[in-house]
Length: 437
Image 1 (cartoon, rainbow, N blue to C red):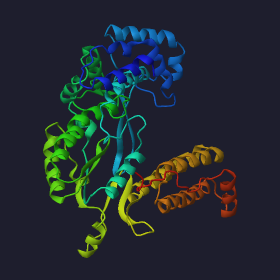
Image 2: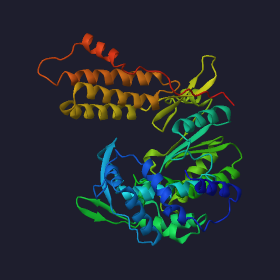
Image 3: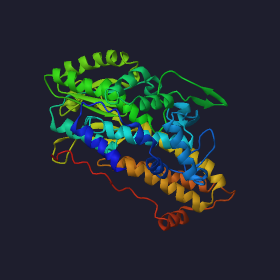
Image 4: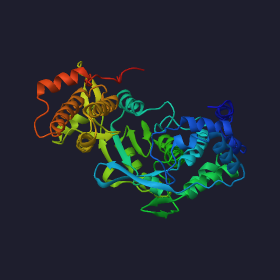
């Protein structure tokens, strides 16, 4: 991060209401572009032009000088993005992603850096997704501590349907103009959004939405929801509530906690109209209100209902007790997410087992299970992680032995190999202490 860029953030923190009019030179600065180039991952998929980071590096200085000149003269035009799909639970086709050309990624990274310096000082603490030094575990921890330490009795979990596809660009430009007065930067962002998507050889342009998968889309989505949701909740909903009211948002998924039932009901009713006013739609099948708090479990039991739970950021949150009998929010891996991860792993090893050596296969398998545990191995989730590890181990044993007609491994030999390669074991890596200050 260059010193000049850092000064933007310092200036915004000191003058939070000022509109910034001189920003574009940061985008075109060749040192900043070079830094963006170095930061990009060269192993990612290439865009429609097929140019990789290694190829772009061959004439790096000439390429960057040419890019900087085109940006300065407003002659830069982003290429259309290549459509790709990644696995998504409940969808046969998968989640659509837009892959930018490598040069476009450099420009997107440059724009992202500038926008982060402008908006990080003014984003609210309730926003966690796609932000520096903020992780999902911090959001999960804040939810647990709030429900346990505050007088919370009701929760509204919500999701916005196809948020990135429905984001209204006219509203986005209005929101950006609250902080940005540099017309060239606004024009560049508009060109990025209108670049179009190439799929099956055809380029399709759209008049709304932000390309999911683009480097700059996450910060733009946070700007959009900062004005549509975060500020509205903070300055309207929370101020007018007689009891406790708290918002926790991670990207377009969010959760709200209330003290009183009528205020939770009123928020749920108002939320639909609020989102529709900005071109968004609530996903009704993923949105619900429930009683959740210190007395929710015993109240549900008295009514003959199931224990109240809600799912957020891949975890099922439920009411539990400490060993001393105090109320505590506990979490386990969402059963839906657990099954999806096992299906995904099975599909991967089925294909990889045909082309990879045993050594490569086991190294990649080890990395996959470790990645899962790095995220899900949190306080109170030991059992779900152990179940995941158990089934991954059995699936791996099964597919290793399908590589030849006769059995390659028995369990004794297989376990010896697991010990040799130091197969991951379940250890709680993220400790959430809900009773700390």
